[in-house]
Image (tube, rainbow, N blue to C red; front, side):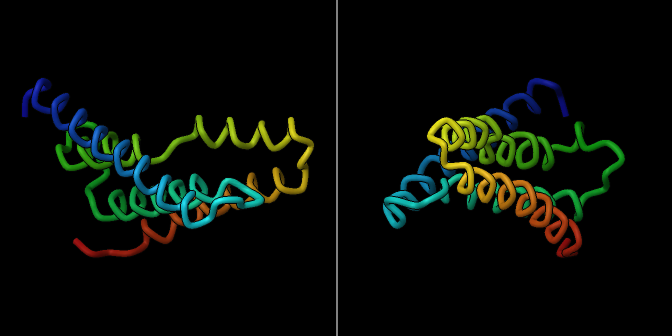
Length: 127
């Protein structure tokens, strides 16, 4: 597959991931309007980590950067769906607001939940 085609797949996957993150975030914020921690990004990042684990656990991992499915879903979709930058902003905001316990809970659940989600996804064989 040509580099141009891989770039196009990356853009399509990234656009879809970003759009789904935005829509799911809005839906979760509507369902949980005043959470103690940023629940929307927590859920999105854990789901995205699980999905990326599921993908990597079911692909031949020798050269993922040239695998069209991994480019569109791994780099593109899940790369745009999950968001470390928003996680960072929300964690720092909790600290700046002196909500230290909430910050610790958010940091712990985000890190442990994302890594655990990835691991569980990676262990499930579906392909």
